[in-house]
Image 1 (cartoon, rainbow, N blue to C red):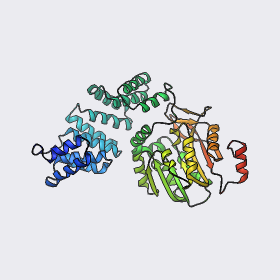
Image 2 (image 1 turned 90 degrees about the vertical axis):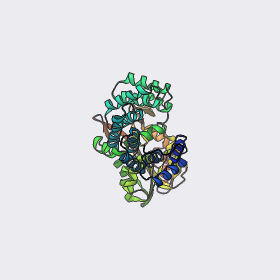
Image 3 (image 1 turned 60 degrees about the horizontal axis):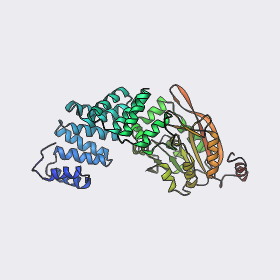
Image 4 (image 1 turned 45 degrees about the vertical axis):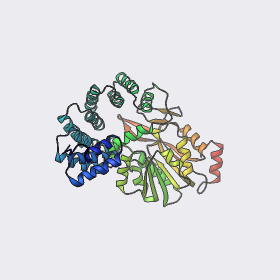
Length: 416
């Protein structure tokens, strides 16, 4: 990694601080090294690693690429560049970087794990499985690799092997909530009230770069258009202050933007928010869990839309109550869910929740909403079959809501 300099010099001190987790101090010393030797490969590489650890992926990529240009024989630099490229949703390029690392050092465990992640996202599960199994040969105690291996085996239809791998992941200390959630979707654990936040964040961070094409082309996704059309049809006033819950890449935001005075978006995935920001339609964007975000809002919005996000919540009461708090009188919440046959809510094998119409009505009434409409619609295609959903429009009593509506809602448990 370049010329190390004298023992105990600034570079060695920086490395020691870096290993000890003192990133700011280490970065300052790496910069001191680069002030003297601007092409010091080690300092460029590890300063890039710190930038990546801080989420500044574009800056990290530039630094690590400069390090590789100076010394292309360091496997760790290629592996870390791959990690940064995954942060940038550049999965094809990341795979190339991991392969360069492995050509230099075939037993580089981090490169194997990275290759597994990249292949999983790129729809190459057999290669991903091979990479994780090679990584586990090197470190049989890595719970995260067992967890990823289990998910891939389930994708490949090897359910028994997948479950065994998930149990091994749990024994090795992997994320217990994610493991229980995966097993719950298979009917092997009690169903939790919502998907783990870390699971949702990681899912969509990995999906961000190909999300729009996969949904609109591969799955004939239409929920965003249906939600936006209903929202605009039921808006009391235009222009409106609008909140896009779980905004993702902004597919729904683009459609409601013409009616917005202010368009806020919130999502748990920073990768998705970067794509939304590039659309240029949002007044503001926040990276947050949506129930926590809503908890801080009080009568700020005229309209809230939530397209294909509440499928990651079984118990909708916290979200719906939070939306009620965040809406002004007469305001509307418009959202989509996948339809359940009978139960209030259930977790499908897809790890997405489904809800019944009766349950949506009950939750709306409990939060103080009037139900304007709940209609069944096809939301997308999956495995060559239509996915049936429910589109709900809930209104806050007040401006634009008649006394007759409120009386019907009180009499019929929220149905108007």
